[in-house]
Image 1 (cartoon, rainbow, N blue to C red):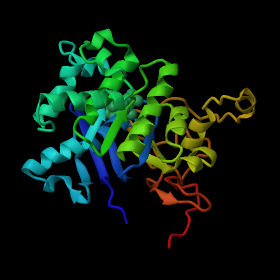
Image 2 (cartoon, rainbow, N blue to C red):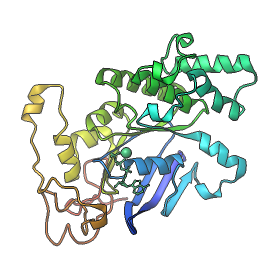
Image 3 (tube, helix red, strand yellow):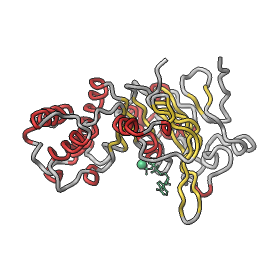
Image 4 (cartoon, protein in one colour):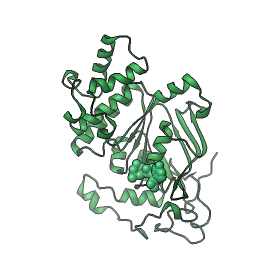
Length: 330
Ligand SMILES: Nc1ncnc2c1ncn2[C@@H]1O[C@H](COP(=O)(O)OP(=O)(O)OP(=O)(O)O)[C@@H](O)[C@H]1O
Ligand SMILES: [Mg+2]
């Protein structure tokens, strides 16, 4: 059996806001295997970025356990920790904010290569920078290397961010809304590049998006995890998530995805929620947090215990919904 690159076991995270502890993540179980794509989707504020930061090691959990390569993250010491940081990289939404405007693209890529001793000499450094720019389809590299971030387009800047993440030869990249700020036409081309990088370099990618249509396109051979108010409500292989969604929240999200074919869009069944308001983290509803909005709400069932993720008969995903009959395991 493959050891997951990263595993979250019952992970929770709280943040303090105005003297109140907000449960931003609760009881997250998650595994990411080498060379796998996992998409995290859900409405704004559901905890996608917080999960991505915990995966990338930028943020600690307040409860539960995080294992990297099968070992608790806390058990790594000294030089091992540096290696670990290299293995797990994150690409943020806004490359403008994360690329230093005072440095050329060549310098931006040089720093991590030199800091981690990944190049022998100047010739090796140049060769590696050329290689990285080519990998992310910024060609010819000679046209890019001496430019400053503001001299590039948004799409090109995001490609530089990806190249910078690749400098340290990571095993996993968290791409947090990495294409949300670029034009639709460029979005697809960057996603194609990311896919190729996954195949060529054997990368695992945690792709964070609020756009299910993008998740479907990008992660068809991977998995999608749907989050709601800090919990995972459904997770599984993309085809089943798209074609046989089980959780009423996933169904509502799927029903709202526009299709390229207008006939399919017209015939799609609209799912009316009982409320459009997302509850506040300071007042998370009892039981299933989705119950005040759920069209299938059953009093005494949905507002009782918090439902756990369970396998469901006939499909491959696991679902946290007390209204679904669980599939006997074993
Ligand atoms: N450092 C922090 N201090 C206090 N609250 C925080 C902090 N970071 C995140 N939060 C809160 O945690 C919740 C989840 O935030 P997170 O950024 O993980 O959501 P998200 O799913 O990525 O949302 P979006 O789609 O808008 O990016 C939000 O309510 C946010 O306000
Ligand atoms: Mg976010």
